[in-house]
Length: 198
Image (cartoon, helix red, strand yellow):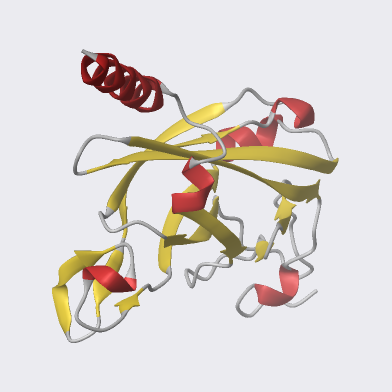
């Protein structure tokens, strides 16, 4: 009869673990590495964990206006699990800068481990393969600040929380929270304007 209680205890523990929400364990599987500047020609700068964002479009000396874009960023992740994780939302909290928070819907895969020599076989550990389990970084480009946000924020430097969320094929949910130090200011990009100069 003792085995019945032992089995019940095991099932209860598994249920408790399965019912836990997102937390530190998520970041052991879905790991955020850094932000990078996307190759889209924007004049705003994204540098690892910080950004310089122009919030005023100036008129240059030649009469034309400086380039002025919405701000995108590329987030780099590594997936320590075997199953790919499909990111579906990113929350950007700009309340500290005077603008309302924004939730954007995205669709980007963060690739899990793959066995060396058999790229179709998913793996979490080397023991899942005949050889080694290899991981690669996954880059996800998303809209960080649209024109509406850029027009609402107050000039200054702020810590902006950013939260990514998604799920794997088993519908297990993963949430990773990070942040970016952002300087909103009237940066001069007239030199980047074709044929205008400063």
